[in-house]
Length: 256
Image (cartoon, rainbow, N blue to C red; front, side, top):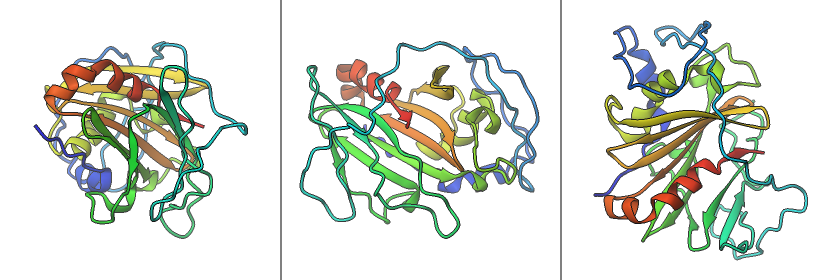
């Protein structure tokens, strides 16, 4: 089965339909504390806050000494992969020099990083891809799976989030996956969310979801004036064989 990762470019159209009652999302492991958030006209009212659930110890944050491999540039890309560690995993950090700002008036994208096995490689993003410019990055291993990073302006979803948005202000986990999950998998997420949890790293919350079908991990967070969706997916055979590595990739995503 081939799963196509779809972007949040149509999030506005999804939120615009919220005049209708939203179906109750699947049971999650998170209890939220609910506040209020005023969204644009015809957009859904999303509750804020989520109870913190501890996650495994975080990965070391690459700093100024981050070792970047000096590899050949593909068109429109700047390499950001470290050399493999002792386990054969590499860390990708979004280069500060990489372009992409969603137009005039937007601040530079706050860098992020994640880990992948040594045999995963960055592949070019085309404006012909679904979601176009909101797909910031794609990685692929034909035998194991693929990932994408979606970076979308928060003004697409609300006009009162400011320049330091938090994922808990956009909404609790069940509302976030109900609102944005369909934009990633291309269909309603009702009955597809196998697990949901909240992790905290350096004071920032990350919502982590596992969905099936299709087989996909989604990590969501917010920073600056943007929403980040980190998506790791694979076909059925790949998912069964490489599940542990795919989950490790998904849970390694961090904002610098």
